Each structure stands twice: as C-alpha cells, then as structure tokens.
Length: 147
Image (tube, rainbow, N blue to C red; front, side, top):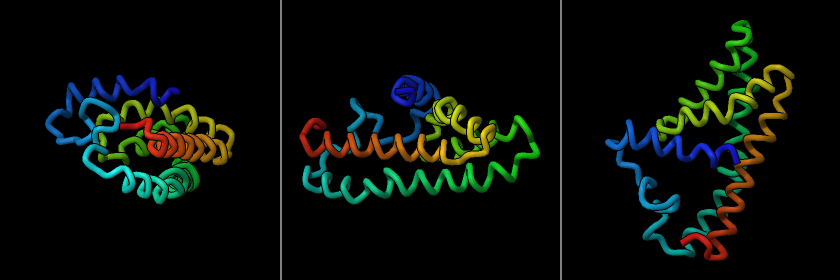
C-alpha cells in the first residue's frame, strides 16, 4: 500500500527531472511497456519470471544489503541504516526517479533489521511484497484484467 501510495511521488520526480530519459513505462498507464506483445508470450514470461523476480532477486538483495553490508557499516551507529537504505535505493539505477520513494518505503524495515539484528524481517517484507505483487500481476494478466 505504501509503495502504491508513493507512485505519484515517482511520477512527479520523473516529470520534473527525468523526462529526458526514454522510459517505455512512462506512457498512459502502468502497463504501457507491455503494449505490442502477444498475450501468450506475456503469460509465459510472467510465469517464468515469477519465482525469479518475485522471490529470488529480492532475497539476494536482502542477503547482500541487510545480511552482509549492514553489519559491516554498523560502526556508523544510527547512520548505518540510513546509508544502507540510500545505497539500496541508488542501486536501482535503472529508475533514478524512484530513489526517494524507495528510501521512504525501505527505511522502516532497514531500521528495524538494524535495531533487532534480524534479517528475517526485511526478507519477509521485501520478498513477501515482491512475490505478492508479481503473483497478483500474473493472475491479472492471465485473467485479462490487464490490457
């Protein structure tokens, strides 16, 4: 819900600073980048990518950023979760207009992981929401709810 609520912020940053970047998804809807592909190809692609982008990739990101990097910058004390969140957000360099919303969205989880010393919290949030959204998107595509 928070991620969806931050979409207008992403659009504002894109429209203000990044219109010079040719971004295929910047069309009239969130699914503009899918236009022109056969429905069957999209379904097969989404089903293949579901375990990868819905679970494996977020898991690897959490293992690196929260499991490996965060403990190694803990000497920064309260600045460690801030730096970790910023580095994670900037790491998504293919969509620089989303850095601010990623910082807002991820910081509470990163702070909680840092405070509780329990990476399972961010794995559950990140991989859990990514898998949920990828599954909902795939089902919507299969049912024809996405044009």
